Length: 278
Image (tube, rainbow, N blue to C red):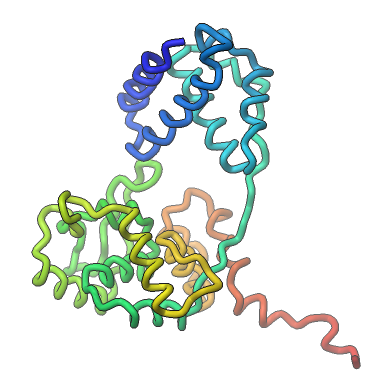
C-alpha cells in the first residue's frame, strides 16, 4: 500500500476544506499509523473492512484516544476514499469524562511569585485571567489587544470561531511593560528563532515554576490554567452562561463541568449525617 500517496491526498483535501493546522497534523498522524498497520494486509484502504477497522480501534487503551482516531479515519474514508458508508455501523465508544484537578488561588499566586521572567509572567497571566487556550495565546497578534475597549480579540479559535474576552487592567499594565522590554513583532509572543512561541516551551517553564513554588501533588500544564480560571469564576459567582461565552463553548453542558470541579459548591453542601450524633 502506498501510504505516502494516501496521506498526501488526505492532507491536501482537509487543508482545502479549511481544517485548522493542529487538526490537520493530528489527523494525518492518525492516518499514517492506520495505513502502516494494514500495509501488509490490504493493497488499498478500500479493501479494509468494517470489522478490521473496529479491531484496530479497540487496541487503543483510552476511550478519548480511540475517539480521536475514529474521527480521523472516518474523515479519511469520507473525503479521500469516497466511502462515507464505511462507518455507518461503526459507532463511537463512550467519551471519558475526567474532571481536572485545578489549582487553588494560593497555588496560582505561588507560581506568579516564582516567575521573574516578564514574558513568562505575561503568558501565564493570559492563560489564567481570561481562560485562554495555549494555542490562542501563541496565535495572539499585537493588534488583537484592544486597550481602548479593554478586550482581547480571539481570532479563528477552535472550531474556526472568533470571540472576545476581558482584558484586566493589571494584565494590560504587565503587557505594556513586556512590550517595552521585548519589542515583539506581529505576534505578541515571539520565539527565540521564530515569530511564535511554542506550546512545548510554555509547558516546560510552567513545570519548572510549579516545582519552584513547591506544588508537588498536581501536574501543572498550560490547559490547567484554563480549567482553573473558569472554576474560580464559578466560585466567585459568575453566571455560567457568561463563562460559556468566554470559553467559546458551543454547548453550555461543556461549561457545566466547572460547577462539578468547584470545591466551594461541594464543600458548602450540608451532608445528611450532620444531624446525626456520632
